[in-house]
Length: 381
Image (cartoon, rainbow, N blue to C red; front, side):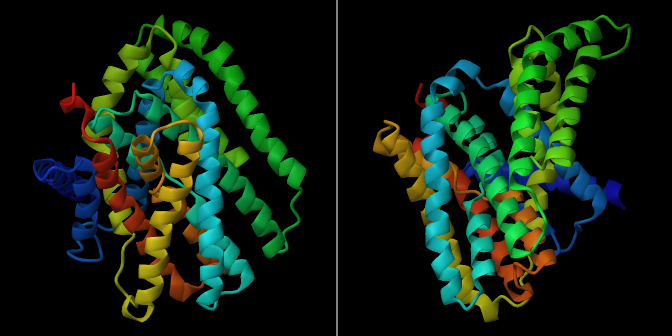
């Protein structure tokens, strides 16, 4: 059955992506929307099963691994101040706007805090693909956006872990929690600087097929797993930094040219479709105002908060708006947080579906917003 679903997903995403481009939008938009159409909410051709989730997870890890390979580390370091401003603006304003709003909808203080933190998260995976399509990934704006998204994820994960330990009464050591995450980034630095280069050289001498490609994928998935499983850091963060490390070696081109068709041809389409599979229209009528109001707040709070952060860092208004729009997508990060909230009771069951749709809305609007503010750089040259 899943083999047939592979056929459906690949055909549907490629055709939808093509149609989206023909209509003047990034192909990502069509690929996300087609997931809603072929998923349980409408046609029901594709279901959200474990294999689908696995393919989707591999897809987003490879997507961020490729983003790391294409990232200029010097450019990223040079724009770290801007990334900090953008990340902080994109965290503080969503919390400030959504917390009182959640209270106004009758939620408890704990539930309001959780919703605020969920909407403070960001997922740059969609933005990465869109920026790549319109030629803005390897720019100052692209570097700031990537750096801000990484910082945003780290800060929100720490804040959420601290908040949940208090709200749920868990016995968690805050210094140990923060210390563990700091240790992981020290580990990433050590591995990137002193382990990856000799490791790739040693692996390249093995008399096996695709030795260098295998070495790169092993490092990517190993650090993604270690970060997520042992330190509570999203797998995409580890994959991204491994990509940066490999991008500074002589093996960058060989690995990138072989991972790209593997990712784009098979796994990444499942990631885009999986976002649409989370949509269900059950009980929407009763919560329509919750959905509409929080969708507007979710979009504006990131756009304005991160946009003002970019402006403070010295970008012009157009670039600031583009950077702000790139931070709007909550994507798979917020979907995971929403599921955690439902299981822990911090997100009421009746608000779960509307919140999922709010997250999907932020993800759908991001590609056209990015193209609208930045334009297609490839056609400007």
